[in-house]
Length: 209
Image (cartoon, rainbow, N blue to C red):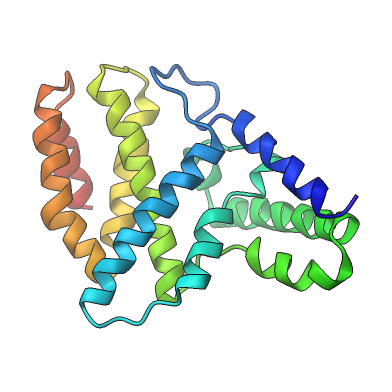
């Protein structure tokens, strides 16, 4: 049915809830997550540009806005499971990419297929745009987990999520990561002082890894 099928499928991202199977004070859909990742990424890219780094803005917007489209087919798999091993993560990625490719072949007009393959590909790579996507994606995990911890959610997975995301972020060598660690994370910690959990200690433990 052509591109109409793609446009209609976007509704599915509104119904896929992140961190499934766990109690949450506030649920987040994949579509809401993708929107926030775009917002984080454009600010992170601005920071990079202020340090003289050239940004391919078209690529950045394509990969950040579409980076989780494949979850339409496999859903959101819990972070600890998804990253249990490199082999498992690779297998899940192959399944996701294969189903996206099948969708494109079956539904997208031939003249647009190369465009959709570029836009819906796995965008996390060693390019500056791919690394910004990785940071922005993990920043949203930080904020989602922080919001639950701040409200007293005792599900241990949110501590794991918060720690894991911070560890991933701090190991990426970008100017915007240094800015996040030096100027944004302290504000998170300060706000976390009103949390039933010791956010400062959890943060310091993660950054020491």
